[in-house]
Structures are given as C-alpha cells and as structure tokens.
Length: 459
Image (cartoon, rainbow, N blue to C red; front, top):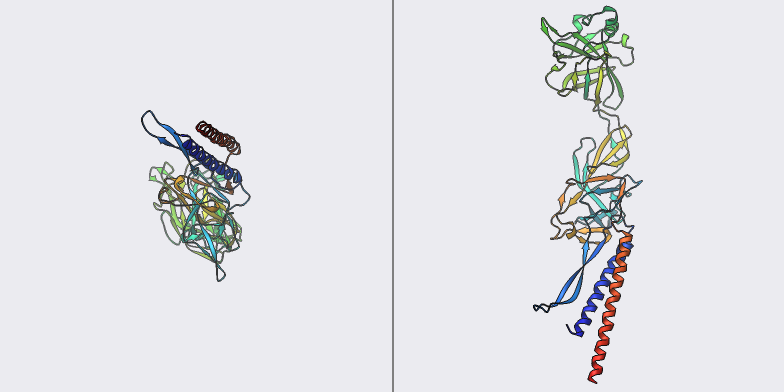
C-alpha cells in the first residue's frame, strides 16, 4: 500500500464511522418511539492486495444491521385497543392515501409494523400513532362467523335479543336426597308421588303435577337449578326446576335409579301454588352413579311454557358426564355448570384484546363476544424486510413471503412495545465511534506529513 492508498483508506474509514454515528443518532432520537427497532452498524473489510505474504488491510465498508427480531419492553397502557406482540410477528396495516367523496381511500399494499398503539378514529377504524390502519377479519358477534377481511372497524355495535333455545347443565344428584318427606318417613325410596306424574322412560310432553298436588311434590323433591331465560324480545323469565327421585337402584330385582326433572309453570307463584311440568325424560343411573339414559345429548325438553311464554323446542346439553349420582351427605343437588344461550338486547360498552389476537366486546347485557381478529404476519427472515417511514416494513425477496397467523406468538392487550434502543449501549458505541473517527483523521494527517517529507527530499 502506498501513501495515496493510505489516504483513500482513511477516507473510507471516515465515511464508515460517519455512517455508524448517523445510525447511533437515529437510534437515540427514536429511543421513545413505540415499536422502533434500532439499526446497528456492521463493518466489512476490503483487502487492497491479495498476493500471498503481501495481504494488506484496505478500506472498510459500513452496512446496516437490522434488529427486527429483538423485542422492546412491553409496558401497560390505559387504551384498551393498544396491543403488543409477544414473540415473532408484525401487525398488518395499510396506509391512507387520501379522501374521495368524503370517504377515506387506502393503499392496496400491506405493510408491516410492530407499532401497536392502535386507537379508534372517528369512523371506528383502528389506526396507530404513525397512521397505519390495522387489518384483519371482522366477525359477526352473534354467530362468530367472519363477515369481511381488510380494515378492522369497531363501531357502535348493538346486540339483538336472542331467545333461549338451549341449556347447558352439569350436576351431581345425591344418591340419597334429603327431602322434607324423607325426614319423617325414614324411607330412601321417594315414590310418594302419584304414578301419573312420574316417568321411567321418555314422553313429550311430560305429565303435569297439578296445583293441588304441588305441596306433596315439593315435599318429595329437591331444588334443582334456577336460571334466567330470555324470550324472543329479550324479556327475562325465571326458570325454576326441581328434581324428584322416582326409583331407587336395587339388585333384586335389578333396576337402575331413576330421576325426573320438573319446572315451575308460573314463575310468579310460590312453589306450593304452581303446577310443575315434567320435562318428559327419565334420567337413569347405574349402580356406579353413571348416567345411562338418555344416551344422547342434548336432551329434548319440548316446548317449555313458563307463564304466558313458550320456549319452542328447548334442549338441555348435559354432555357425556354432565350428570352423575354420587353419595352426598348434604342430600342436595351440586350444580357444576349452568348456562343458557339467550340474551337481552345490548350495546357495546368496552373492548379488550385476547392473547389469541381476538378483539372481544363486552355488551350492556353482560355478553362477551368476538368482534374481530387482528391481522398478524410472520417472516422466515424478519431482518430481510425493507424499512420504511413511520415504523413500517415492506416484504422483500430476502424476507420471504408473509406467513399469516400468530404461529406460537401471543398478543398482550392494553400494552405497548417500547423501542429496543438501549441508551447506555448507544452512548458506549458513540464513544468508540468518535475515537475511531478521530484515529482516521490522524492517519490522514500522518500520511500527508509523510508525503510532504517525501516531496522535500526530491527538492
């Protein structure tokens, strides 16, 4: 290497260190930018001579080194639609290009970002602080089915009234129920009910306990579940039930234990002053307490009439092991699961982001239903993405195609991912870069002095 080459090499060193200090400056400037990924600098040496035994270090080339795979700290936010990705992945967003006839227009190309400070705009679209509009799948809150893909919009959603058509029930019926009658009769067989109102099989509609026999029925049965059901218009109706054991299990002759379920026909009357309707199905248990009949679920209850309203074709889902008959010292029913599929009308009151990326809405009637699914994309080589303005990235050949879905990552709602810039580390790099820059200037001045000395020798 001659002196002129030394000057050129030191100039490349100055350029490389200038590039590094520029990246450091940008990292520090964006230390508070949500979702920012710092850009590190890598240096590549270039040999000026490659003759064996004559290898001489030549100039240097500075290149950017992305840190898209390094996450920043996740901090809590007071905005429920803010979100952060735990693991790999990027939010899929589009950019607004303008307004046409009073309606916003958007680019047709997806870009990707880790900036998750999304909030609703005036139209209900979710947009982050850099102007990226979140995309994904909008859902029908009633059916849970997808209604559209593209921009996510969380509007003032109303939930229509939904009549109750099905109950979900799981409980243990005591092997020896403690009824009012059992305390005086001393009998474990509760067959004091008239034969006309009990079933050992299935008959729809089931028999009815008249008002005149309500007292006897109540004394020989135990309280079952009570639940609020909803009519077609969303009006609440109290559905009260009682269980009656109509047959004990015996070995000689061999017979199973049989229970009947009844509901009160008049929700406004007392238990002793209303008719009780048998649901029309006998629930049979073997000697181990396992339900043997009905063998299928859900169990049809027929038309359930409570007051002046009839729930048409109601069913009860007890699953494969929802009902059991095990010994219980209390002698009462132990309810494990009790729900119904109806609701009154409601309006959206709040939203929350689930770990699976689903945006769930809470309605004024207490229902919590899915409104949308956030669009997430992953890449085989995230550092191969092309950085764009506003914290966005573009797909490239080096990054590979977008892979839709979380694929093992999770979402944290009401949170933001901070910049992954470490101020202390950047200051350390800045000191080293400044020293290297100064050393390159010293090389230039030394080479210039040597050249001057050489010219003086010639003179």
